[in-house]
Image 1 (cartoon, rainbow, N blue to C red):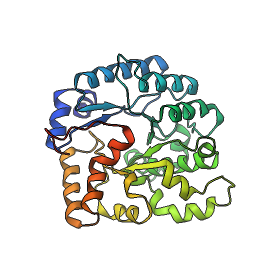
Image 2: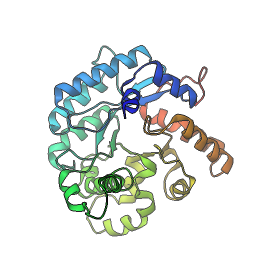
Image 3: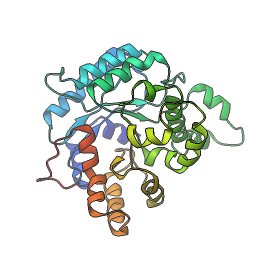
Length: 301
C-alpha cells in the first residue's frame, strides 16, 4: 500500500516514467474515492492544476467535486473547467458513484451540477467507490472473510454493478430528460451495462421517459476500458455500442500501463476492429470528447 500511495500522489517523474513505459502520451488525472469538503476539493484541484501547468503536453485534469454539497460542486466545476485557475482548464470531473452515506445523484438537488456541466460542455465521469456502511451491513457473511466480503462488494463485482444501477437511476429520475446534452463517462468496459443492454431497454421502456435508454446510451454515455484487459467484454460492446464511444484508459496505478499496452497489441492482432476504429479507441475518441490537444510526435500512445 505505501508504494500505491506514492504512485497515486506523484505528479511528476515517476508518473511520467510509467506513462512512457506504456507508450502513453497524455494522462487525464483524477482523485481516489472519498467525500471531501469544498475547501479540500479546491486545494486538491489547485495542486493538480499546478501539475498540468508544469506538464501541459503530458497531463490533463478531472476536477474533484464536493458531492455532499451539490451547489458547491457546481461552483467548483465552473471554477476548474472555465479557465479560472490561472489559465488551466480541466476537461471535466470525476465523481464517486455515491456519497459515503449512500446518496445517489438523480434528485433535483443535483440539477445545478448537471446544468453547469451542460453549459461548459464537459463530461462527468462516474467512478466506483467503496460500498456504503448500509450496504456492507446488508451483505456481510459470517462464512466469508472480511477480505472476500470486501472484494465481492467492491472491486471484484459490487461497485461495478453499483455504477450501472446509478446510471439507471439517473435515467429513471429524468436527468437525461432535463439535460438532454449531458455527457457521462463510465469505466471498466461499461460497468456491466453493455451485457444487460437489451434487458434494460425492454424493462425501462415502461418508465415513461422522453427517449429510450438505448437512445441515451448512444448519445449521452461514453465508456472506458480502465483495467479490464480482456477481449470478451469488448466483443459484446462492439455489437451494441457506437465505436466512437469507447475510450482507452489504464486505471493507473491500480492497473499498470505496460499491461494495458499488451491488451492494445492483443486487440490489434485480433482484427476485431479496423485500424481507424483502433486509433479511435486508443486516443482519438477521448481527444474529441475531452478537447485534448495530443501531440504524438514525441510519445506513442
